Length: 451
Image: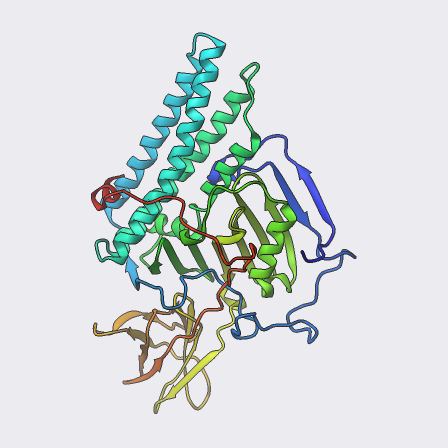
């Protein structure tokens, strides 16, 4: 284990509320920048290694991704407001809320203390089963999309529905914890309750939150990247001035591990995200308990929540946000016409792409229409560069052509997206990576559209 900086440990006497209001946790660790309390070296310090272990571009932040060559299906699509999904999302939320209220009422109406205890035990088992069901539903949706049975939009709707259910299950967990505390002579392993909250938080990421806003009509139509592999899904988008990303690798989960030291979870994340670890970290927190250990890091280039499986001892899910001004888009392509110069700074499939249009003589920004063509389909208009001459979009998972149109001409360049700087799972068991799925999804495609 690496030498660790000073740790400040706070034991929380009551767990936070579910996946929506916070993680269910038994302890949180806040790590100071280093032993002396000073900030670690900046990225531009020559003493700091800026190249990731897998040889990616210097300064690029690692991402959890579907393994190379294992993407079953992917796409970048624009999604519009649709009354059908919006009504369905509201129905999902209402149904789960009624189930929570019914659970609370059933426990409170118990005529004896022993009956109340028994109903609490049943409610806890039912809650754990419901969390397992979310895993199964997500795996089934990922497989259906990979096989062409769901569109990208339909997959996003399912992922949003799962996040809504997870949010309500988090509320149910909090209500259950309060009922347990109010029951004489009855106690529950706090790690068990913390594990439920920690697992649920992995289903409630920033991309799903924005997709929900789009589907509810609270945000404008938006472009989303979706890619799936074996029990794995990656979704990303550009929201305002930030790039946001979620990844879930069900193939890396064991889901039945014993508790681990909080420092071990920190070590795993430090190994997986060296660039983040070597930049200025404003706050680092570990949420302990059960089989999942979320590690939250607020840093100078955005924020990360990495979810560590305590048995496999691997990061199996992540949520990331990076302000566009902090994104390293260092693969530069240029093309120049008589009146327009095109520059494309790109990253990797699903990553942010910066398109710039300018006057080739003066360098002044040019407001140009931007089109992207990937594969046999016609070019898709994705927007304009505006008054600053810049448009951010997302990279497809294949070679594509970017074209800008302005001043009566079209200027194009062909882009071959690079490999992402992947988080590489470490062998921590002595016999290879041991992450395996915990269950086999049996949810049907029809169920995915209605649940």
